[in-house]
Length: 224
Length: 364
Image (tube, rainbow over all chains, first blue to last red; front, side, top):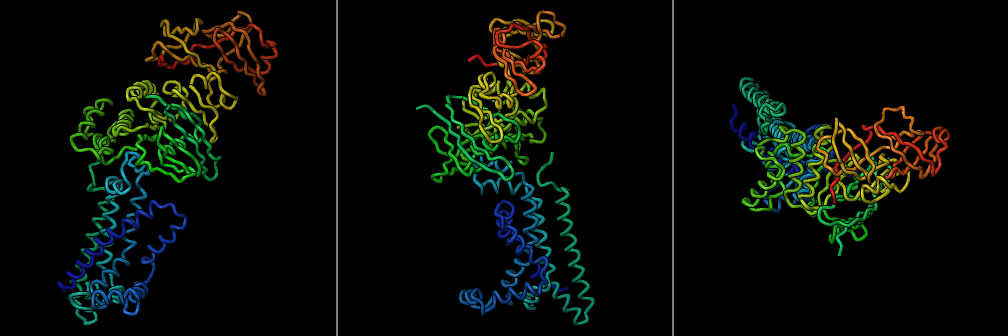
């Protein structure tokens, strides 16, 4: 088994899930609570990675962060090297690619929160931000866990976007799924089988967590 | 300067008549304003606008010297800064918090010792001792209502806003808590606005009453005046109880209460926890007119009165009698013709004891 690839993959997935908690929560809050009539425009953009082929998404991200784009030039000037084919570039792409896997469960959880509870909190003098942390988050834990776990799992199994943005660099951008592909190309089926089994077990375990949380096996707060 | 509450607002919802409310009244101490009307009349929207949870397109909301809303000058104070206590119809208790946690929720600005003291105080006042660690879902309807009220009152609001505070309760609890709520409101000594569609609640709890129908405020006044002297037929229809008079229970016999109304005796069915001072309420359709004393009906009350006025309302007629107190009867056109009802005629009004509703009254 390629332990370096496993380490890179786990690091990428964990950082992606963490970043999506920070990026996804405000987006999800806005999507759930805004009454703007054109909100669906943003909703569709967030959902795009679900339907776009990873190569298409990867291609556009590559163009956007490449040395010929304003953002790519700025990044190169600030950091000293271009963003594509680095771990950071891959992380950015993963965040965009897994965005719907985090945001949609968050929105679903926020949509479930009774608006009258939120109004009660406001009338008690508690600010919108405080209400978010003291009331909405505790009421949405199952959805927040689901979003974080799904985006972690989705990043673990990412292939097309990694190939487009990350290339295949040992130790920085070679992830498990690419490693399996390489092993099969080299006709090393035994190596591929081990890594594939690892990915299968991890994915299954992660989905177990998601479904258990949503079935309230471990209640986020005591129900009694 | 007299303390005054001004509510002027215009708010439209698609597919519904616009709400145009103009209410202005004086507050002293624990003045209770009742927003009374059928469901869908806009009374809850008016209450929510006062809370800052609804933004009228146009309007002014002023509470004593504070301006909460003035669309003309762009003043829109958010609910957090209005210092109100608000209780929605379903109580909206926070399910993730205990009873004590719910009550302490709005007190996070206090140092912890003071917060604890205030929570204790409020738990005591609302008789919630022993339930500190209970979760809202474990409480009965009446307990939930008390917790919700305690939570709203704990931060010492300037104004208490209650949306149908008793409607989520079963009927016996509702009757019991109606009187309890009145006592509590007076104890708290802070002004409140209560939305209700129940006339008995309006009479028991209210000092001032605004009758609302289809978004319009039809009449504002003391509840007894609104009930007994509705400004027009619309108000009368909305309130639905035409005769409301002050009385005093003088004796209880055989499941009956004898109530004296300006010297005239009325018999009513005995009711639980009714103080000596009551409002006697009679719906006009429960009053049957009879000629002479040849009574065939089983009614327990037979009052002799003089017809004051007869107003035809299509197939029905509204008859006002003077029986020592003003009494309104609703009769058919054929009755009017048969009895030749006209001002000055002396006639007997029969009312069943069960049709005389007693509501406790606070002696002012």
